[in-house]
Amino acid sequence: MSAVSPCCGRFAPSPTGDLHFGSLLAALASCLEARAHGGCWLVRMEDVDTPRNVPGAGARILACLEAHGFCWDGEVLWQSQRREAYRAALASLRENRRAYPCACSRKEIAAAATGLAIDGALRYSGHCRQGLPAGRGARAWRLMVEDVDIAFDDRILGRIRQNLARDVGDFVLWRADGPFAYQLAVVVDDAFQGVTQVVRGADLLHSTPRQIYLQHLLGLPTPEYAHLPIATNAAGEKLSKQTRARPLQTRCAAANLSAALAFLGQAPPPELAKASVEEAWRWASAHWTIGGRKREYSDNNAP
Ligand code: GLU
Ligand code: ZN
Image (cartoon, rainbow, N blue to C red; front, side):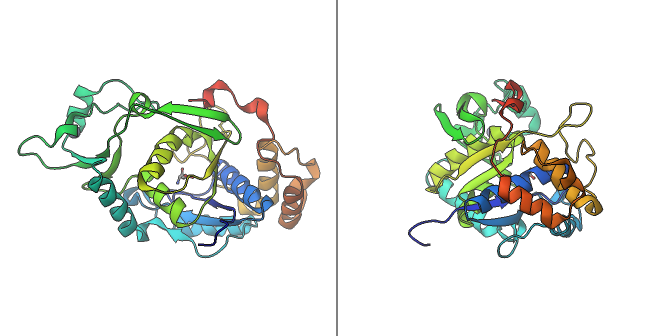
């Protein structure tokens, strides 16, 4: 690594379906922001959660990005190829006694839960912190969190503060019968790829303190974070595969880019929707400012 680390952004889709307008926002904003700083921009395929992957979705996502005029630097990193690195990170957390095995079943977790975590999931009671109950095996490895506030300055949303013990609880790093958790994989890979700025949807805002905490424990640098407003459908639901967001049509690439720029508060001229993809990018690069639309950020997005 060089003495001065250059700016580097990334887009990290999960290949669980096609790209939709919500994912285009994260791709476009992360790319424009990195390029505005003269930085590199990487694509990482988050296919670590293998049962949810849809065959062929990764290739379709890359083709769709290309059709929308995106050019990423270097090779795409596939998380399914990175299990050794996640294993090593988990081993180091185990050695430092920060990760511990948990034998609890779903039922036991529900029965002992001490309330809800910030994302609405049950907050784990910490039952197995003192060791596995006799005769029981590990179903998962969890991170032991402390009763401290984690704070960071989001480039769009400002100061964000979360107490991991209160708002999250001891969270899963790895399930014995399944994949490594997103929180662990993303931290290991952002550091491995030299990512210095993370720009993504505000649906992941609640995860960021967990990631910063893991970075501290693993001795990894913390990137800058910016969380974008979330696109919703007519019913007010977040656009996602679960809410059956429409896949992006590549024949409307310039119109899609133009709509994404408008949503991101860049106020593109109406003609841009009918321009070429190249022109849309030229306009976007010349006018980009992150967080153009402050009034859009309501309390709903704050933790
Ligand atoms: N793979 C995650 C998703 O598609 C995004 C991860 C990230 O940007 O940190 O929701
Ligand atoms: Zn347990």
